[in-house]
Image (cartoon, rainbow, N blue to C red; front, top):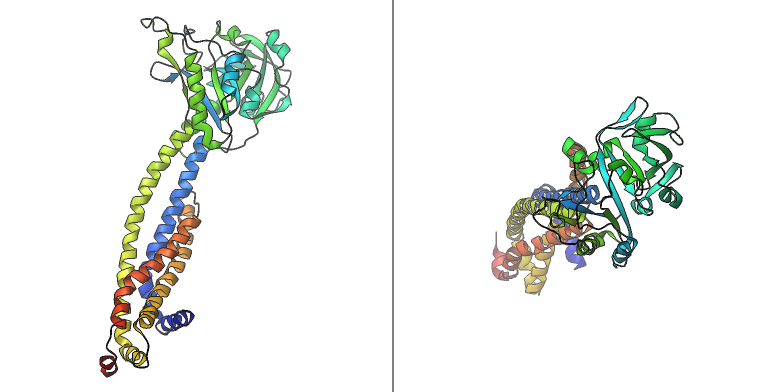
Length: 427
């Protein structure tokens, strides 16, 4: 085998241009496949990262109304009948789910106006009423001041915590802690500023992507206690829930189980009333499944492109067969001499098969290098992410070797079956 490989390289080097042109179809096919797989894999990973986030495993389970629109305060809603408050017992029931490591209940509403500090105003801001666990579950840390305490809730204190965005927009360079802001004309004291531990930011390049990934976060968030919430919206309201799954792959199951638990506590009421509990249900925000669906579409496109690229491999294989047939013809006397000296069919067969496999394998290796370079070139030009697939590289090299064996088989069999006397007389 070693001797056959040495002879193969010797033959390739003796006909460098011919060998390169023979390998060109293999090189182009392998390079195209590596570039396509790497680009699609990188895009798929970005889809998942943009939607799911960078490993925080957070799943929102929101109360929805009508056509699955999330229930939000400030939309002219009144508190739905039959939808219970999220008690500690319900939270514990959710926390007992194997896939869930933490849970928090919260309320939220969109404040389109009515929040200001002096002349500075916030428009289209998200107001969130938090329980004791919200900040830890969502991964917030205190950068200034403090968070809410049990006494703040018990005494219905008009305190607020700002996120970094709302703090910078309201106070610019001023120190926010201790200052008073107005929410719907009432005074609230800022006791802290928070920011999320996870600094992951989705890669949004268009206005639609920005809206999808960031939503209303552009104007920041303001947090109050869930106890103080009714003072802003005039009545008590049901909660939404956010759960933290133990792993990214657990997110779908964690969200679905929390959804089922919450829906089991909704009490049926008169369906003729639009405010009936029958018109409300909890629904998990299954971003992981959404990411997988988008990745599936991406993978389907990838498979079509790979099939197209594989045509060049077929052309390359035909080229290998052609050049090996030429090689057999050129070396007919050599084959006859070897057979006259006692070389068996399998020796001749092995020699030509090895030469074909070495030729295509070398083309495969060069194609891999070209494919990686092409992938990064596409990444720089089109500004798309790239993730080089080790499995695709290994499979490409093996596949190129198989092509050499398959398409080199007919020329090799022809060489092995030559009659030694006819071969020696061949001119």
